[in-house]
Length: 320
Image (cartoon, rainbow, N blue to C red):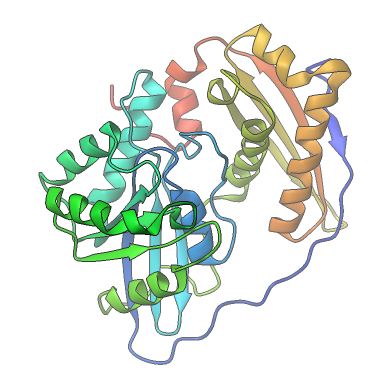
């Protein structure tokens, strides 16, 4: 049953207006978004851009590759590089993800270190700060999730982090509620160097639609499964067919490491895979602004996270 595709019905989606036109000498630059897993980097990037460009879940290591999200506001364009959370890698996949994160910092005009204010200074954060101290672009500190934290403890935390590393600016935000994000966006736009824009003004991300579809499916896997399944699953868009009526047919394959994980993903009589497909199709219909016919297959492929071909399909570089 796992290899039989299941379609979810299409639905219409709203249309949003584009960004404002520039009104002076253009500014443009790249700002890397760094931090430990679960710091809220992708949620912050989505909030800053005003659109969903990165998938989000409450599980660490949700982002697996560098995603460039574009803020175009007034005369300024900020290219945010949403990077995977930096952690101690074990698999080839993990090593490629961490390399992508550090690569995002090296290519940037500036970097923002996003810190989960509730967690404070953890060992993973200390390791990141130690490496940044060896050389990094101009750094800003962004304390996130401040709406869930005793504000009396924010100043000591800020002082501790600034003793560990020199930050040009410090921001206290809640990416979830939007508190403090407008100020951060405004200052990001003002901080960009003068120069031509790097992307067209109506572009929000450099993620191809085929990869976006795979990521939206993976987001639902992260949200609807638990334990080992989310981090041992990957999704690839196998085919993309434009239809005469303006809709699109998307076929995705989900790879997992073991047959037991495949059974969990499929669920009782295919209930879970249908729910994953239904929710992913709804999200894609909104993002692509047209009807979507989504078909999902599940295959067990032991060791996929050590395969060079799978890493390339994810947009990651194999360093070995």
